[in-house]
Length: 254
Length: 254
Image (cartoon, each protein chain N blue to C red):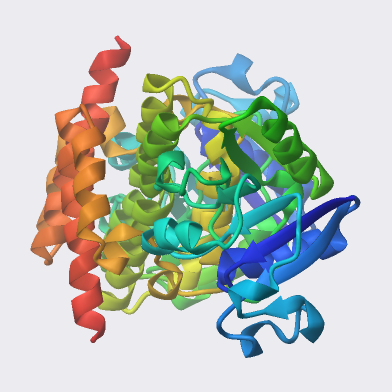
């Protein structure tokens, strides 16, 4: 059994706690949290600690706090030479305090409070200072059924940018779709099957093969008609630059 | 039984043929196509026609051809006062020739060749010149198990713009994600669960509630770091305008 201690009580912390409890091979040793109450539905009271003096020895300490707090939390830990990892997409390994053996265990997914995560389809981006520790990370990922990838801190930075495009920005395009619908008394419901199928398509096809639409066809009449219909200037700018970018991809492909 | 004739042999035509054959209540009367071969796997030879003199009487004629050909195809039809509809998102009803009773039967989905479409989750946007014809359209939609919505030509234009945002542009953001991955020796695979879950989330949450990321948090350090990492100028511009637009939504919400 791998003894794991989680530091934090937010979204990622809670999903990891849930996954560890269901896992084959991980014993949830302790959870460090200033807010005991937010965890009471998940963890027995005796395992929740909020004082540095209460830490027991564990095989891995997982810091699941906001990006900006990772460095400080890691330096405040009252022990040395143990495996300490964080779960952030944008914080380099080097921001962890070097008194401990450092690593990263970044689950690349968007977590929703109270919605179960399918860890079997979840990629974990991992790295460690020492080879032996990487084996521990592999064992943790496998115990919760997740795929894992060795990703360096530099690569992870770029991966995080890519994730912003396919998650944050994509979600905002859904929002714009919803706003256009609202403006014309159309139910947003009507777009949901299209949203689902668009994401589904690139699970098997490359996005370049899956691309359709007026920009791809270079259908300038439709593009002009669409721009004339948009009343919001920011939406117009987004339409223009994305159309331009799709047209550039057409040319690159040739 | 509703006797339906399809005019066209492309993606939409083929998916409709397939759905009609499986339907309860629609009899595929004929398919008009210049390219008989492309349909031979779907339709018995005797039902495929390529000459205007061969049209039999049907309850509905569905023109499923490219947007720019709809008007011409509809005026070339050798009969009058029958129900003729097109399947396009961007062509107004009025582009159909008025010698027939006009309507629109627009399935709002992205079709992939050789990949079965789930018609039970597919919204059909419909309108008709005459009330009785709308009942026929409802019966056709219900016979293939689809949801249907009364959408005017004007609304449909805006809906098509919204569809470009949530489908064409979203797919292009996937493409950019893939390009960033390739540039840093990262497998695109790693983003696929995130893409799936992002689309999944807004099936139940509003996009505004689902929004996360540096723009939403107004995390200017991360935004600057991301812009510094992007090497492609168009990608930088897309990052900036979408970040700006998310920040505007934050303000609008207040």
